[in-house]
Length: 365
Image 1 (cartoon, one colour):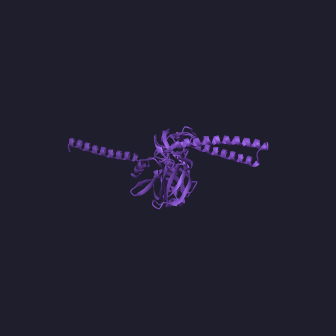
Image 2 (image 1 turned 180 degrees about the vertical axis):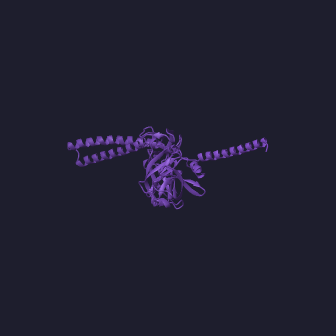
Image 3 (image 1 turned 90 degrees about the vertical axis):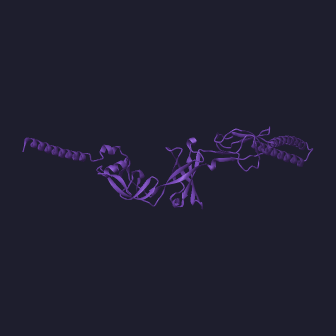
């Protein structure tokens, strides 16, 4: 064999050995790159603790905000007349006694006339009574005549009181102007009056509706299957689309013990304090109630559960702070809570952030 052939063989042999070593090194590096969850990574993750349900479950109901009917006033016209000016607009805040509108009314002029006449008649009756007392003391009149003068004075006094009350009730104006005033402080939530509008005292539609919105009602619909789980006095949390980062707390004040035959729901009323008047009548929201339940299974937030290939899993943290994939069976789901019928125990800790990425990384090993 020639030296050239030996050199070629040596080169081929060295090449094969190099390739073999490279493959060995690549495999070694692949083993070194095996995915692990370190303590530093674990400390940056959100961890949930599995809780015991204790016979409670979170129920969610649709809700509609309404004015507190017990702190609301509907104003109807007391007299007929022509609206000269409306001083407020829909949504305005008003105070008790504030004039909402002025109405020019012949009836009010008549009330003023009645009050003036009653006042004059009372003065006249007072003079007659004074004369009757003097005549009785001098023996020139009888006791019966004195008694009649006193009775007439009392009648005229009562008539003036009535006429004055009617005049005051209708604005107390001698110019024939009827002032519609707010009896309470609050907001104008309904307005059915405009300038130059003709109104009648027999109008069956209110001109203004004033509501005190310091506390509002949330009317909720309860399905038959949930009726036994709630009761008056239960605390609730209300969330709305208008204030996504804010919740409003209240209590169930009244449960209406009637089922709507069409919708098959029962209504309940929630009273909610409304600081800053953020909640407006007509708003829609969701009410969460912690109601009674026969379910007494371990419960975990739904964010911790991973669905993969028609099965459910969590990333369970073992006592030695290792993370492993744990299959679970779901007994029930309510809102953002999942009740686990198999696979977890109260007190177990599970990963609740970046869990999908970690699950895929651990599963592929």
